[in-house]
Length: 247
Image (cartoon, rainbow, N blue to C red; front, side, top):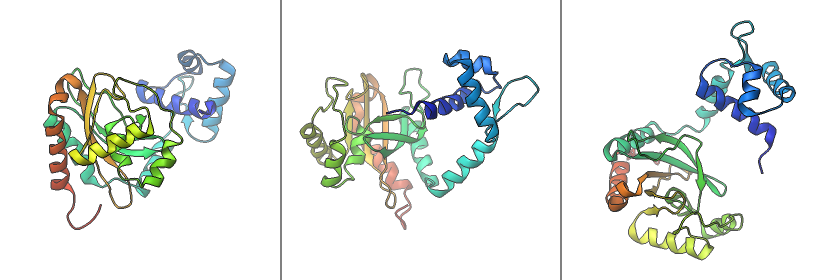
């Protein structure tokens, strides 16, 4: 369930991230199709809390640096080791596809670092992108790090849907795919969630954090070489992961 007021705040910040310029109350209300009165109340609240300001008189609102300061403080608590960004950057450069670090978020998997392919036809993914944990290679690479009891708890909350012809739509089907992943040494997806998209992923535990790394792209391009891509992921992780620590 989405709390509309909270979603509206996040949508405003995404709006400014895309437009990268001040906007008036009317421009924001018209963009989202919101009533002027509720838009005014939301902008006024954010302004009073120090999250929006008016750079110039009557020029509209813009986020203050307080967002950045808070984001920095938050990220400093659970930072990803620097080598993980090098990992996805190297994988993207070598494969020409989108590479990502993924973490669990309930029944979903959330992308926490992304280097997107430069190809015109590519997998479009950004930090914060969410996919079903059971229906994707990246998500199943997370589930492999769960105990059976933990997986069963997650399964009880999943609404199994047929996203594509190969989507696992039962607990038994997901468990069978996990067993297959263990046997082959990596997780794979061929349109399981996003049609015409293929990917390879492996678990990437760091300390007590459950993460995975995935390379994904159009099925016509990456599908025939999924095993090769998975082997490259494993070699790159082995090359970059510090040998003296689990970080």
